[in-house]
Length: 627
Image 1: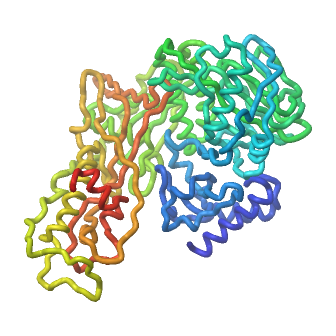
Image 2 (image 1 turned 45 degrees about the horizontal axis):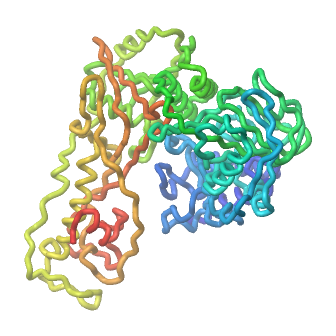
Image 3 (image 1 turned 180 degrees about the vertical axis):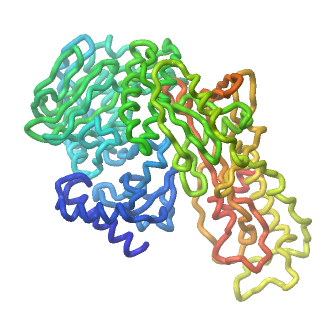
């Protein structure tokens, strides 16, 4: 940990604690000095987690504060990260770069299950249930002393931050708590009328905790995006708001064409249909603090609406691109609202004004809106076009930078459904100077092991005082080769399954993993396994002699098939990662390719290949079937 980085980190959190959040009313002079210093500061990331680079102190690039489980951080650097929340010492504060965001890491969901563990048998009860309108219900709730203390503690944890979308106003954080959701579900079943609960399954355990001070910007009129799980036929139909503080104002809560709430008592709940447009403004007489979650129902009759999925996918993509092109932020928000409303009002109508991005990556030009991708026909093979679309959609890390940051982009605003301009635009571009993707001889990475020689037996516990015989050859040792064969099999399974492999800035494509069937391109992949931590040995072991030849990034996208359509001039791909607004997963593995060390470069306190693969020998044997 550098002294400079630690100083910046400590200054940030000193101001952060004084104000209750990094955007508070701390000394303006000190704040401005820190901002100026951070804006001029460039530094390498400290580590990576869940697809994001992390820094333990803010820099010009790593500006957005997040909280993660400290146990998930690399043990070698874990101590550099601050633990600013005294009540939750298991949470580490990290700084991330918004340029790296993708679908799986837009939001920071903080695990607070331990904070609410051990609630009473009936920690919450609802009463005075009253319908304010056909789809709006108000109720009072009472909580046990234990739950009340936990809810009050939310305001003191210091987890609040401004939302990415300024139209939301105030500050908020998102947390997960299954026990609180279970308690709420039980209480709602006791209190709400039967017709409203028909098909009710559970309360979503993901909560938004919102805080507004007098004078903060309003939470603009919007429609809540519903939760949807296709396989379980689960969909959220009602929003649940739990107001923890009292107050009054012009419109602390207002529904379009419905009731307007001007005063709210503490411990007031509202349950309303998610298709209702609503807005909320700060109180004029104090802090406004409330939780938001939703009621999830089982409904097997829900129909798939491709137009909704298309609009939602475009909204998410343009939201991410607004980091590079801020003018896209308002358009993305409007697309979110239109997609959310369309779940209840039918497929959305096309609007006159659309946004597209013309992108160039290493000489290849394409046009996209986050759902549709257009390439000039004949410039690339279908598999290469599909691979580029995936790299862009998933914002994959290549050679130290996210894909979207490596692209030159231009925003195009167009009206109407005429897209003939796309073919004309692509026709004007020069062909790429060289191939973007190279072929990779995967078999050449994994040479067959040498023949075993029984005379090259492995000593029981050799250390520095007990050297190996001069004629001992690790490449022929049966016990070393046993480890190498397992490592080779482990790495081969991952490399041979990966449709896209990255070595630094080099991209390699396996066309056999892209299967064209009819008008669909299927991307073949595999599920990745989670890493295991491993502690090195003190004495030499056979695994010490299996090192890393080269480390490859194997992209393992688990995505639905892409549909495509070809004209005389363009290849048009359609990519819906959300499948009607439910997201699928993707993973990326670092795969160390093993080699046997000759004994001159062996570290007695490290099993290099196992360490690079985040495995221990028992796990390697279990995964590869070796006894």
